[in-house]
Image (tube, rainbow, N blue to C red; front, side):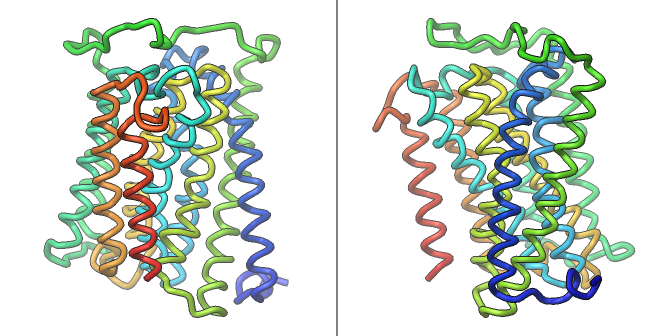
Amino acid sequence: MLAAWTGSWSLGWSITIFLVAAAVTVVCSVRLAGLGDALADRTGWGEALFGAVFFGLITSLSGIVMTAVSAADGQPTLAYGNAVGGIAAQTLAVVVADASYRRVNLEHAAASLPNVLFGCLLIALLGLALMASFGPEATVLGVHPASLVLAAFYWGGIRLIRDQEEPMWRAVRTRETVPDTPDEERFAGRGSRGLWGEFLAVAILVALGGWAVARAAESLLEVTGMNAGFVGAVLMGGVNALPETVAAVAAVRRGAVTLAIAAIVGGNCLDVLNLAVGDVFFRGGSLYHAAGSDQLFLTGAALLMTTVLLGGMLVRQKRGWLRLGFDGIVLLTVYLGSVAALAF
């Protein structure tokens, strides 16, 4: 029985498990949106900070497990590609969420200093990852020093963002701006402990889904001989992005627009840390140097898309091209162009 789960799966089983795990992830993400909105109010952290840290962590669990499993199984390109592919696909999730919010451009309605700062943190983390890949290939106990630097940089960024009690920059309030204020919640009759318990239970399901997707992707790679960069970046990365995408759309429909952006940008920051997780589990040296040209290309695409998103949050265009804003159209173009380049 154990061999059936740890060995290579048939093509039919791989596709079935891949799709079932993706469906479970979607269902869990819808539930997470409601729980996250309620807990953001109860903890007093606010939608932006709670969404980027706790909510982002839970929605990133599937991606973390995918990266760890692939790295431990000696598939560094799958592990690296899943992390950066998830970032690119999750950034595109802003376009999907924006399309479901018809009042105004989502980046305009969800303007907040924490979301802008998390965008800056994400750019810095991606830059560090690229520096590690092009820097010296040195490891300590099998782990590249950049993995520790990424973790420290993330922790320092969180502390800096959380301590902004009297910010020197504020978004201009307009009629379309949706303030992050506590509201009546549908979980009013339930205690916070019960909500946290359900939140963690859903997180476990998301993590199990990530394991199943990683194993299915490895079997697909072995059976079909598909390009590892494409499988890791597009297929695994796409499923990796499902929790943030679905949760963002669900949050927008609940009116928690700040939470929607925070979940995407915060989840992306944690996906960069996936590289550090993969580096720890990969026993063949530095994961950063095991990345091929496809993975580094996609890292550059993720960096470009993050910069465009940050520009959209700063410009705060009310309505733009196809009612998406300039950033939405550019994000869609960059992602589709990147996928086409990887496929061919």
